[in-house]
Every structure is written in C-alpha cells, then in structure tokens.
Image (cartoon, rainbow, N blue to C red):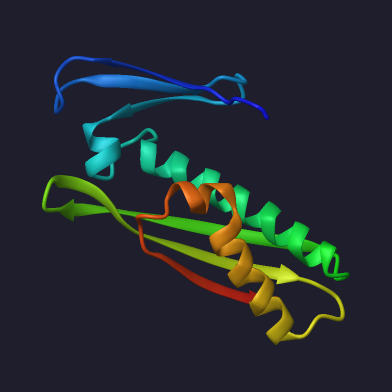
Length: 141
C-alpha cells in the first residue's frame, strides 16, 4: 500500500512562533500559527487538514459503498467539522461532525443512511480517529 507524507516546520515559541505545513505531493503548502489554530487568525491548522482528509475519505468510501450496492452516486458532498477543545491532558480534538449530502438516483433514504453509516466507521481516516466521537448527518440531496 501507499505511504503518504506531510511536513511541518515550526519556528519560535508556541504563542509567538510561526510555521508551515505542506503535503508531500506538493499539492498544498500553508502557514500556521497560534492564532490560526487556537483563535481565528489567518492561515491553516492541523485540525483543518484533518477535516479535509476526513471529508475526502468519507466521500470516497461512501461513493464506493453505494456503487458496490448498485447505486452509483452522481455527487457526494461532505463537510467535516473538527472541534478543538480541552480534555484532562490539555488541547484535544473532542468531536468531529460529518455533514453529507448526496445525489443518488433511485436510492431510498433508508438504503442511503445504511451505506453512510458503514462509510462513517469504515473509511481509513475514521478508523484512525476512532478515539474521537464522530457524529453523522447524512441525507439525500
């Protein structure tokens, strides 16, 4: 199987420092900082990157499950919301919400919900984040 890479460089202390993160493929590189992570400052942050990865993984897993059951989707659109909060040890990802709307001609809402539930637990990113509560709001568009 494939091995994917990501890179980060951080300069300085936590509050005053700055950094960059990049994808090994070169498809993305961006700045991050204390304000971009813990406030609403400009730049990206690790949680935003996790959200994008989770949305992409879930969408692909759901599309595959639907097609494998004979219902090929026209579109699967997913937003992942990664909640950064605190636990007993400090900063932590405390919840992830997956909001999905899909266009799947001829499929019942019940069959869609069943496939979405399978994708929620079966996509590799969900498996990697298994210690975090993941909520799913999935419906046909």
